Amino acid sequence: MTDSDQGILAKAAETMLSGLLEKELFFPDGLLGFADCRRYKFRRFDPRVAGASPFFILEPVEQDVSFPLIHPDFVWLDYRLEIAPEAMTCLDAASEQELGAAVDCAVRDRIEETTVTLQDSLIISAVSLRGMQLVVEEYPLRHPLLRTTAQ
Image (cartoon, rainbow, N blue to C red; front, side):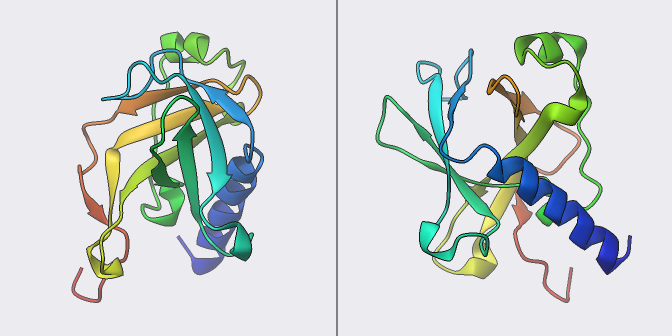
């Protein structure tokens, strides 16, 4: 994949996730460890740098906690998810084109130590504003956000 292809993918990811900003999302089954939290707000990580950051924040409406997210295309170029028909029904989605993915970030003091959880994907329908969490075991649990020259 060329740098140009990577830029196109990143722009598509940014456009999809940006369309969810400040909207309320519904996760019928909640999230792992937060089964009772079903309604979430989606916002940009730092509104003072609108458009400059690839990070987003998912916040439950019912609790004071937040989850930093990033689209997987920013860290794993060939990240693919197979969406089962049952998942499409749960998301009230007509096609996979209306779906966007995000993965959780484990933010550390040093950016070099920050990781993303590729096994734990959030899938969100931009049309129905419904989401769900998928566990995808073929990807690493923790993957460095930044690749060093040794990787």
